[in-house]
Image (cartoon, helix red, strand yellow):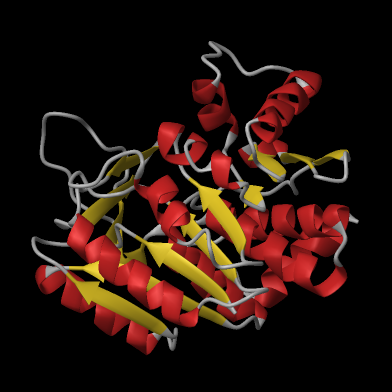
Length: 303
């Protein structure tokens, strides 16, 4: 089973504003409301690909109820812990550029996290996957993911995956996650780089992350594709498919889902990276998460 954890789910309010101007009233040309949160996106993408997945998360208030309802309608197996506060609303503005305004999130406490740990200990078994990704609410700190992994370290043979920023990610490396997936800007932030290095420089940074404990590292680079270094000492680069950017939200989450889907099927790192890159590209070319057919079509263009 592939389990995901979303500490900070959201309702994402997408608005199209033609020629948005600052300091005055703007009116939307179109709008829609969708469930957000990186872990939920990963599970939804895995479900679309036909994989068994179960999503955990924390919700609060009337927005939390709306998240529950929308996830139920999508048919995703899940368990949400009810907490204090209000689940966040993220505003995604599409105009001449993309602008995101992300909310803070619910009031998740350590007591709430311990409820999650207890549930995970009940269900996780050897061979299962646990994916944690995205931000955490302001009530939790940058050690949240590493503390979660620490509390689960006695469960043998589970595959840990982490996708986050800064210390929220790097603190997990001591628990040797099977896969991490920083994007190129997150990687530059980790190593204090003022500009994006060339491919060899990206490989070098990815290997440093391996030296810190990660078994496999994917560095996603948006329209430029993705780089990967593996625990089998392989280094590889896949170019992204060319197309019109429609919406970048969920592309990185689709990459994680695509990689795990193909890796479980073939056990081949390059095939998995190629499919992951196709999944990320397909997602960026559509308003929603991509369908399996869309991903497979994009992959066929990359072969």
